[in-house]
Length: 339
Image (cartoon, rainbow, N blue to C red; front, side, top):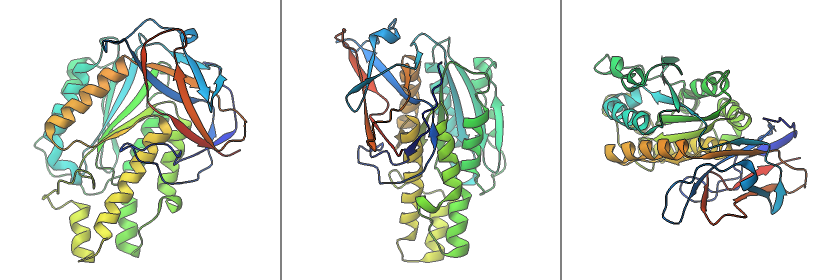
């Protein structure tokens, strides 16, 4: 990969589409970006994956202007997927369904692909490394089932930032992080309870740090988000922040606003990294989404280009196959820069 230091700055909102297809809110955060990544899936007229394409088959346009392909990962190259599972108290009642979803994901990966698995609550715990057999990955969550209730403390941002920055050392092929979580970091909850203050994204230092890592890093981040304001399933185990906030603040919109802020943070991390957020409403939904992501990643091409200096704050990404009739699907369509 040819690294080009563009010294551009990406804005977290990206003025693109969030996971629900709505425009992201404006949010400014200066970060240095070497390469803008985009994964693309290519299918023929019958919907079958098209393999064997090379960088010369693709054309990347930034605001309509062709850009050199500075990084290319073919669909036949191994995909390295790190699965990060939230085992904190607020998700403890979902462990069995998490295990089934994880099994579906691992089972859908191609034999050439590699998977690593970690869990987090108060800290990040590696469960299966890159070289572990698939059988180990499939049973990675087994030791956690039926155990004592986990702590309600969730160091989500710290765990995700650690994975983005450290889990892919020496891994040069295509990369992604898949996170199964409710997205609730303890810092946002504590600030609300202890200071009666719901921190907005712009003022959230803990979030800005993990966002910076996602913007500067290579892996796309995909979320399978549970128990959000889009698919609320209240945890009755006594570790549900939403329930606790309802008790503390009574008849007020605070619990709903809290869930909204949690969701927006996941969407912005997904947007800036080239991933996405999915909101399963049932176990079967989660299993299907995990399988869909695995299949999509395994057959995707990874492209990258250096941001230009044309002065436009909003940059639209368009990937084309100028000489081929196939259909193409992009993981992201826009981003913002600030010179």
